[in-house]
Image (cartoon, rainbow, N blue to C red; front, side):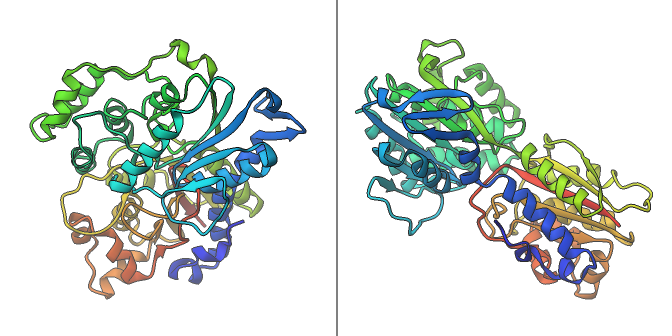
Length: 442
């Protein structure tokens, strides 16, 4: 269980209901704890393992393996190993951060995020090498969570790691949506877009998935390594044209796309031995936060879990949800994943930018608060998960000589809120189900 006090920055510490708000944020994170999610979906009774209603007789398999990758990969692995116990053979885990956890049956090799590096390439090669030895008598669990697209990479021959990083950089800089980024990744990588399932075959595959993608399409979470891919090469070319990238991305990538290598599609016989099961999502986190808020006396409203688009534009739409205050305090919750088109040289992420864009929109309003929260505890390249904005934030910034419009123009949300003491810094939470924005009226 996460300690609510880690959310108590300057504004929350000084607010009369700050501790209640911190407990609402903590409830959202606790609800998608990766280890608990695995335990909710997997239950063992001697040799019978029940997962989402499906029974697996462990005595039918010679070996039981796991491959885990993503920000929540290690806690998911620990929980599953605890359930499998003596029947677990070996596993390969690719988290974002190094860990002191030890198990002689596990090989733990951190990758890199949000941009893949040499460690991501090594992690991809590790999984492909291991998959070569699986047989039809083996059961393989794939534990998949957000960040997996970058943490493991295995580009096709002729496409270098530097090429992949440049493509990702270009896509992030132009504000491409995560689903669009993943469409390109699936068509460039031997693991993504059903590629891992193809490599693992003919073994039986059970994928337990913690979603960090809006609306949780399986092919998009970590670029769908064990799911059929509904996107096509035609979609790839459309995205490149949409963002005017054809002349900007590495020529090796264009050459690969011209080879017309498609990903496995729905209906492929490959997936007859594959089960993909969603064990956690943004919706679950939102609902848990709403239930906690109700317990604390707030009227609650979930505004949906598919908010996308430019962070600063989403801020405008969300703040318009504020209504005439009622006698009952109000907590509104929105989930999703926005984007930021980089134009400045500052530091920040999508949650911090959304919060910064809200500062002038809330200026002077009484008894209101907006809180942004990246459920993984880290907002882009920063150590913050989001920030807190109130009607007094603009005036406090003015006293300190901070111009929110100037910081927004430079994409420098991190330093703006750092100066105010209003960053949220819970640290890595070990989970990742997109982002949450809370709007309070008191």
